[in-house]
Length: 252
Image 1 (spheres, rainbow, N blue to C red):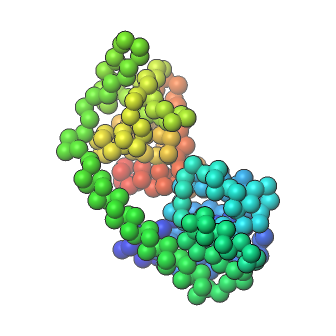
Image 2 (cartoon, rainbow, N blue to C red):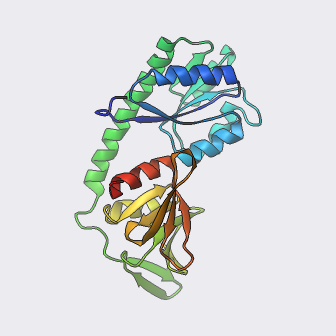
Image 3 (cartoon, one colour):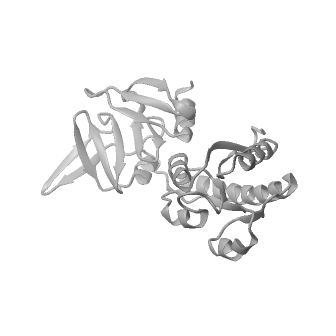
């Protein structure tokens, strides 16, 4: 793995064990990528992709419960997709889904690497655009207060006093010990505007104040369980990407 280059995070889904073992081995030979999980059914794939938020998914088309084509519309996270299948009749439909590539099983390592390289080029372009956007849009000074509107009342909140901010069904709520306050901003906006040395996005649903963390425990699949210092000792599970980000900020 080349640490000088950004790492593209990958999930793959296939219901057949021999195919999973072969794909896993092939991916282990390709640099600048990290496999963050695999799924054996369509439902597993949906949960895994939405939770881990990978950059790329290698997706078998014919799987139990929900096939690879149908599950794309059920994802809240939209990664790049390379379809893998033993049947060539899905090729047109696959490209109509704006897939990055279409691999016909059995495919050699060189063919897989070619598809991964194509996705990696797009990944680097997206990374560069995101860095540029953050540099342009990030305010020179982080937000010093948040406003929660409740009817005719406006409650002023200090970022220092907030334990964490959560997203539920598209709405953001600042949790201040045993109370939660509705916020107009999205979690993405808050992540950009709050101090990046104080607030860390540990999950697509959680933005935590690291000064209000009481304890951190190792969790399964490379995740962490973050226990906050509020009265309830709220337990917030990170994603794997969120765990990496938290470790980096805390220097652990």
